[in-house]
Image (cartoon, rainbow, N blue to C red; front, side, top):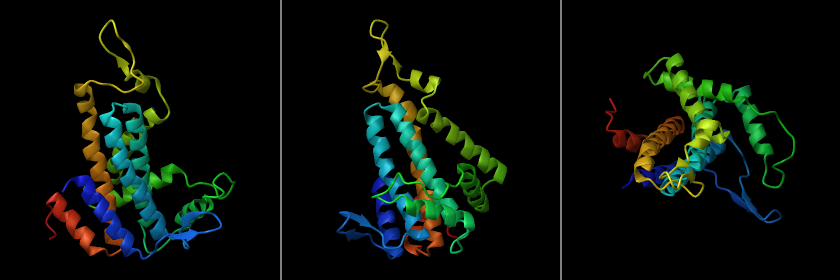
Amino acid sequence: MDTLKKIQLWLDTIGSQIGHSPQWVEQKHVFEYSTVSVEVVAYLKAVRATQSLTSIRLLLEQGLVIDFYTIGRCILDCVDEIYFLLESYPEVSKTVEKFLQNFRESTIDGPLEEGTDIVPSKKIRNASARVRTEGGYTTFDQAKASLDKSYKIFSGYVHGQYSHIMEIYGGPPNERSFKVNGITSERRKADYLIWIGELDEMVIHSMAFMAKQFNCEQVLREIIQHFGISEH
């Protein structure tokens, strides 16, 4: 079974574990959750990250590297938010409650209305670094530096910075142009391929954390087996 299929199955299992399902709201003609709890929001962030893992594969296949990294940044954000939301679970800090309130206010029928101020991304990434440090793999400063480095790399594509746009310029001397329909060089595409594996692993690790916090032993056990890590 390929990695993406495993991730999708783990996502479904975690979704059934939290015990909430969206309900059809006839007057709005949409599906919504009756209770937008911390469990639901963390799960929805995992849904977004998993869907985006599919997107980056399609984008890279077409050579759309700017959008590949832009969606990659969305995956990084979702992973960090999962760690932030569940860092002290089942306790909900004031900062997490503020995040949840802002999320609840972005309803399908009123996404542009002003509401609760957003939680600064720095606080979210700091929580992500703390959780990763608790795993015993690195110090907080090292974890934070690693997260910040990836965040800056991907953010350059989101904000359309000079060097990142210039990556799509090239071709034979008589055909050089901006490859707005996607780069075609398989060699160049291969240079970006490593990020698919790394983003997959980031999402899987965040799911392992969710499984641990939600006492979803089946998913946690399968992820441990996936990485070939001893449970003892």
